Length: 215
Image 1 (cartoon, rainbow, N blue to C red):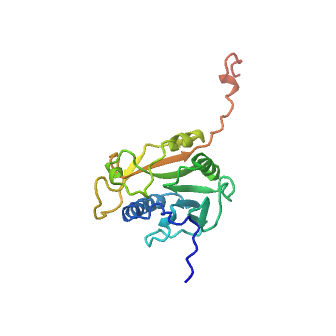
Image 2: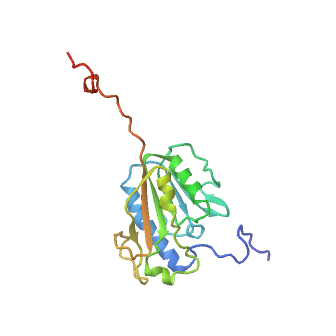
Image 3: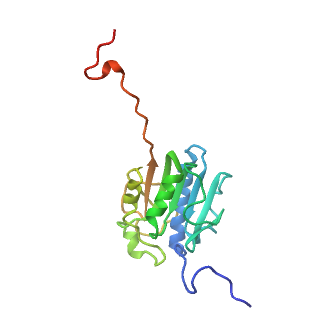
């Protein structure tokens, strides 16, 4: 029987293919689905790890949603592409980056800022470097990239205070995905909003210094 064709190198393991990693990804999906439900119905893009796309508990993308996963140096899924993304400027209301690899982080954030509308949000999920969970972290669970927030701010995005979800010390039966400010949980969620510059109207003549008073 011929070998199954794969786009990866022989023997290479998928990121987030372990049981613990898959459980964490599922918790993130449940939490984010509730967050997106309260957002305006705008087109969105979700970039996920390759090993997570076969999960049964995925929130099914609406007609205006794109679900992509890592595939080699690019992405597969709803469409197959690389960077730059084949999307027009300011066309998306939300972009989800679920544990992206550190390679090309600056270029990826730049593309996300380009395709987001003013007021659009970027949801970034990273392994929490301060959590005790990282001590038992499977090898396929990559560490967080410390420069993500710097990349976001360099694109003029407003970064909110991070929240944390997922297990702290050990696996436990899920009781509903919730976020908290307790910094010892497994996943760190960073939310950044694109804010355009508001136009500044010229001041009335009567208010300018030295101007003649209004008649």
